[in-house]
Image (cartoon, rainbow, N blue to C red; front, side, top):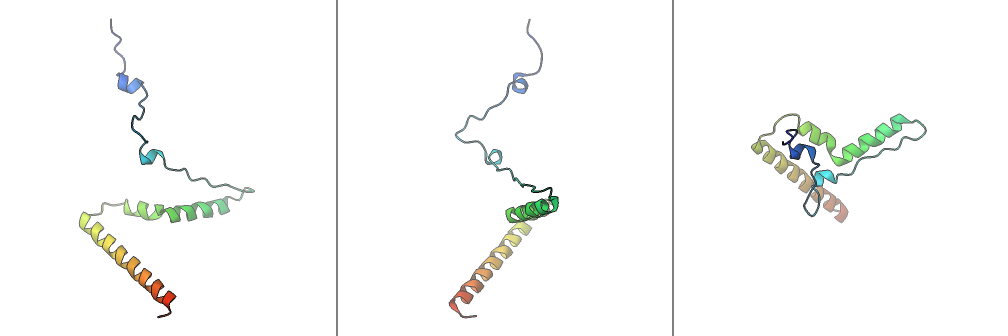
Length: 97
């Protein structure tokens, strides 16, 4: 008789057979050290790290679906802003402004 239980793909642990695991598995975990029970300072540090990573912007973007045309327009506008900022810094460095 054969045991009819859960299928083997449910009971056996799956392992990755490629050269490197997918990038979402290798994401570093953010660690914040709380010193002297100062939770407020730790929260500020956490918020700063999240801001630097762009997590708040990504969460806001994922709240609603963004049409591909809107995404392209946003990316174009961001590129224009970056180019203007770079030109402004370059002009300031050269002494034009």
